[in-house]
Amino acid sequence: MPAWICARCAVQYPDTPAPPPSCPICQDEREAVPPGGQRWTHMAELGRDHRTDIRTEEPGLTGIGIVPEFGIGQRALLVRTPAGNVLWDCIPLLDEQGRRAIDELGGLRAICLSHPHFYAAHLEFAEAFDVPVFLPRADERWIPRRSPRIELFDDEVEPVPGVIVARTGGHFDGACVLHWPDGSGGRGALLTGDTIMVVEDRGWVSFMWSFPNLIPLDPDTVGDVARRVGRFRFDRVYGGWWGHVVLDDGAEAVRRSAARYVARVRGVRP
Image 1 (spheres, one colour):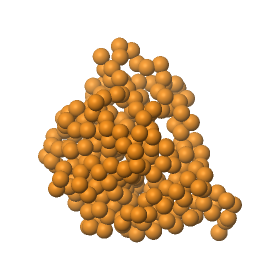
Image 2 (cartoon, rainbow, N blue to C red):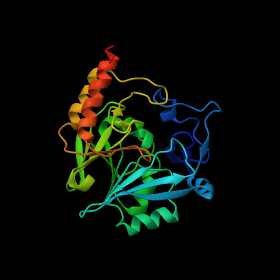
Image 3 (cartoon, rainbow, N blue to C red):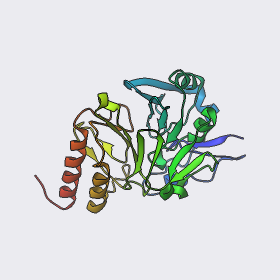
Image 4 (tube, rainbow, N blue to C red):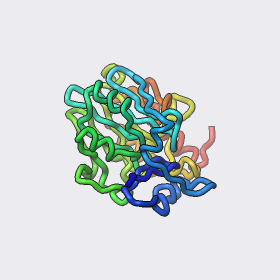
């Protein structure tokens, strides 16, 4: 029996004889069911006309995506450290090319995820590389497939020494970021998925309750997210898609973006 994958959000659900009647993640107001209705696939079918796309983002950081684009189009990030590698966020396809590339880069030590929209096929990766998956307890209700490999945490976890995954809330109650202190040439990098969204103007970021449905977050929550990441030293911000990167002065970009967002929500215009 296949583990069914939602064609809209690319999240994988349990093995069952028939596809689930619906995708709870897409039915939530933060996502959307396509106009044509719910559609399902599985990894074997997906692998017939898709393949993994491996790109170097910077020394020690590798992007892993899918071509042609599938679901919401996100890519994962492989953070390489002397203590082992961490896969940040996930994609719905693990093919031979992707497996071989990860092995050649040192394998995996742990998997961590920013929020449910990027869960994808995380348990397939966990099983293939024999590693734990760290998820925030605040988002436990959204876990689509249960497994003893899943380890819940409250506010933060250190999947390998020196790398911290911290819960910020915002987009989801358990929404997280990953702080990689060795990133950006030792100046630090923050990996955010769309917990903190790197926008088209690459010097800025933004925050939303729902991106596809354009539902904003309240000012207090945005301020809290900015304060929670303010304790980290980072120069670069990696969002959840190819090219969504603040290349320098990332900490200041988050600070001024939060201030701008709060001002606009409160009706202050330039």
